[in-house]
Length: 121
Image (cartoon, rainbow, N blue to C red; front, side, top):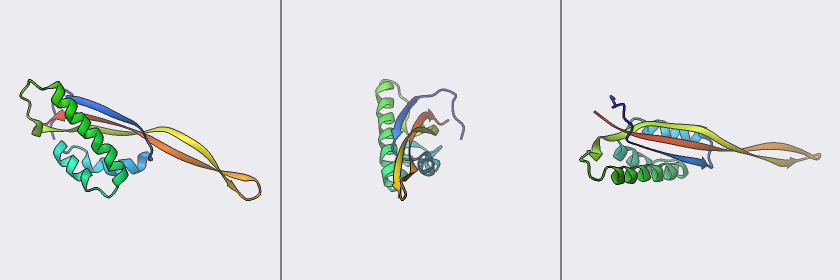
């Protein structure tokens, strides 16, 4: 898995309403794959809600790549996911009422995903 040092296209998706731990389960499967294979894996993934967001991000990166390198003869099949990172976003804090006038904390977590596409040698 040798990559050139040059980054071709990168993009991010912020404030996904799902915890980073759940998204990392899907992201670990598609890390270091070719972009066409990653799209196929996400299409048939069990984590449907997460995979739809990641699929949209990869399709957007693919169209950005085509627009940026329209005149160059760079092969689209050699394009792969160089880096994909999931970080924690903002956490919404809520209270759930429980007996005797108390409240339990509910943390609704969100995540940020950063993807970098590179060219495989």
